[in-house]
Length: 148
Image (cartoon, rainbow, N blue to C red; front, side):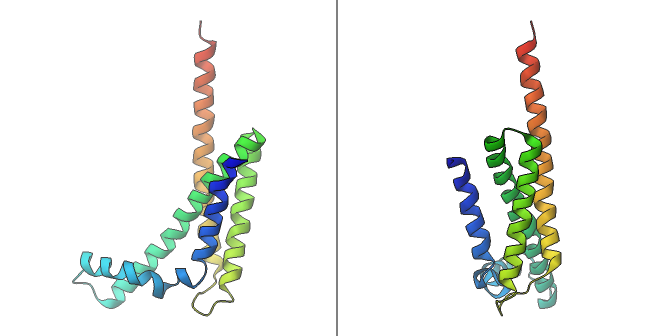
């Protein structure tokens, strides 16, 4: 069951970032100086907009990583790619909903169904990609072992 440890740790990280630690005020402490450096001639409004885009892309990336970890763990457990993909996606949706629900009670955060959609897109994309690559690798391996 050690293959679930990275998955559990990542879920804790996601839920931790869903607290006030992941608020725009907190992330602006390190993102804003970087944006000021990279886009020094941009207006503050433009930098805030770019910061918002980065935050939305972070949803996709963090849930893509969640989807990857979940798919791997469930594939090891179930041994079946389709079941693993379904379980991984269900888990990603559950975590996304839990995260947004948690944020709805935090005054420094905003809860949005669009964020859940971004989370699902990130998880779905990586689950599909990893499943296809896994299938291809399995087909190549079996073709090599059946060659005379």
